[in-house]
Length: 219
Image 1 (spheres, rainbow, N blue to C red):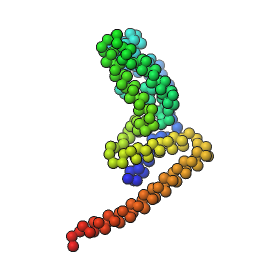
Image 2: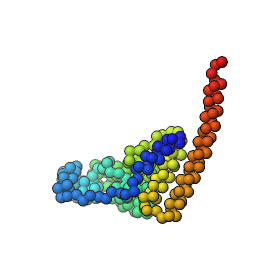
Image 3: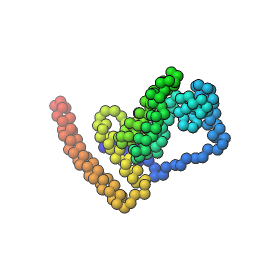
Image 4: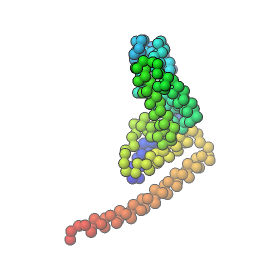
């Protein structure tokens, strides 16, 4: 169990580097290419419409477009991709999006837009629930980085462990004060002591297990 945790720690440690890369400015040619690659509006056929502006409505005919399934929850809810989020801002963005795409506002629109609004609303709800809770937010961050937590075994314990590691790394990435460093050092030392205790117990259980195997061998 602990070896798995050690590997997980190293993997997570590698996931959150100290710096966060900034956005590159696109040239006019790149912007034009991005627009030409965007899907055409299903209603009026304008090229690049759905991929620009608010990304929900065509800028020409204002028809609601299908959800972008490739868009991650952080982008959808206008949050920095980080374990720490401003939950007040998150709630405001959620309410703003629901006022845009909730099915109640599309009762007089085409059936296509009604269907899209249902899908948008579900996606917004899922995104909000996922990012609001620290555990689901952390697991989603891992998923975006290609790390999946396997089902079964002591799954909940391992999730909690990974959450703690993510929090520690984010604190270290933010130029922590001497007091914060001492706090983190104290937590790590305590965990090492717990690990030592677990390994000591494992040593005794291993000895008992070997004796059981010997007893099972026919004379």
